[in-house]
Length: 183
Image (cartoon, rainbow, N blue to C red; front, top):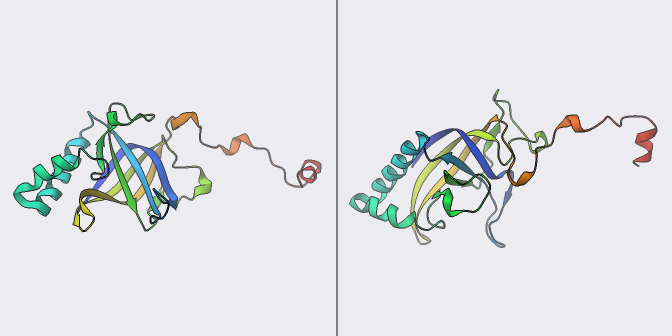
């Protein structure tokens, strides 16, 4: 296992506040995918970390095992974004991370965020901490990432054309005639 911190990466498919199951009957997990431009220097560090984990697990067969696993998105958390037809993936590498335990989700000032805060959202920029590990058990071999925490960094164009909610869009309907009509 090896902990790595990603900085200023785009967030995709965030399940940070409510866990979901990939398929019916599977365990629900928190998770997210992070997009890193292929020319970002963090790519080299991430790939070196993954190879180090593979070598620690499989010894001299580490690189060959990793090379075989990375061709299968069900066996490797790290993929070429060109293999997906999703907003923002072109020109990027993607890494998906999951956790059965809720990760810490914080704002720029490190204050905790909740789902009602409207951030982080798919398309924004975040920092994230992941634990990279190699799986070799009765379910097979794989390269996995455990999501530890996510920190909102900056706004970005929301994926799929959906803009994040803004409190400025609403008017107060506290006491008054308009409030009565809503009941």
